[in-house]
Image (tube, rainbow, N blue to C red; front, side, top):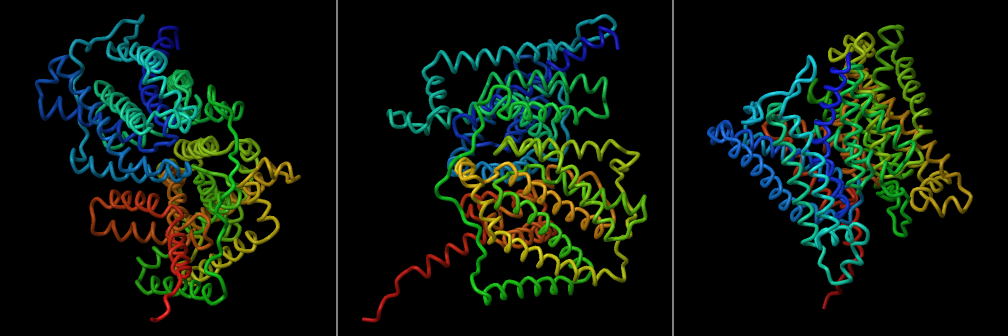
Length: 624
């Protein structure tokens, strides 16, 4: 590639950086003041794009022929995104302000599902191709190459937006109050400044910037319903790389990621996604707080949830075991469909249990746990297809692959906590997904690995029984660890790491052990998935699979022994039943997720336990 080609790719990268910065700056502003990590930020991006695209092509086509009309459509798209952000702030975000960050992430993921189906209903499922922006349709000449004028405009727009935000935050009273709220919101409240309208304004500004970023994409690409998730993952990479809460860090990270993405397309087209996430991983290993973020620290909490083995007593637990077995037998009686669904529930239960082990006992949050699930699945499939391994050897191979990667990766990430750890795990999952997609010679790419015969059809019923028994043994093992001295040490490290270190506990070693153990168990779940499905595809490493594991334990209850069982039944079985007769079932599922996170943050089992405890604690009235 000559100098002209290199210059063209750098300009492409800087133009892409503008979109990333507009998204990242809005997300950073919202997090800085509300302390909420908004996974639904991509939905506002998509709304701005879809609104502006329909405005200039279908509703008012004349706007698409005028620079002022086109610009007005873009501004209206951004304004609509800001208004929707205000509604979301009042209805959802305000209620989640004091919840743990993971619960906020899952609640806003539910919002993503709901908004996605709402936009599909309103705008329709088709892509919308908008015209070029009037007056900026040409290109400038770079040697033998040409660079679009519109992308040059967006390239210049990025620094201007950064300058505008900088002046807004440093030269205005509103900006000073926003910065004060970012540093100490309670102190600002004590000084007589109501933080509620301030937060509302910040959320509207952040969502408006996301809507503007989406609208600015129209002259470059069509508006479609895949824009939300595609852009939000890369936005999180920029925000975390730059440092949560830092506008300047977001700008520097957007430029860095944009340039690396553009150069990767030219020099390493098969590894572009890997390079982007590898960049984030390197930055976070070097600086766990990001390029310009404040130093990461572990919160010291006095009141923490205790891992519950509820119900107490052998009678209550026997009833739960009987219900578990009974429901499984009922599913088997429904034919192949019911049997397949029950297998999915139990494998997802084991996958959720592996994440619950890490979160409930170790306090480690993962947003990319599907990496180890996928490694277990591909390890088992490759051992069977290329080595002729049977079921047990294939499962062992999958667990070994997940274990080896966890041994290496865990040594790098145990220093991180909270969102930074979650994003590092997401980086690993995305690299595994990219490898599974692009390493066609080994993984089959999008065609996957098919034709697995790890379980003979005539023995499927036997293995279903073994799987059911294994799930119960896993629950027993979880309970024994939670009540052991090691479990107590893990929960001490989770709740007060500095105090635990002062008491002589090996904090990093304990975190490393629970991380590796959790990854290995996830590898076993992935191997079982491959065995029962008979095929493996790159989707097993997707963000959606990681989110499913989070939903399983959060719906059932992170700190409840049976939480993964209840959560997997709700998610897998409930989702399958909704999907049979409801076109917009994902939106309904999103509403259910938001309701559970707001009304029962301890999960369904936690809510039931608390309700029964309140009922038994109420004094009984004596008869008059």
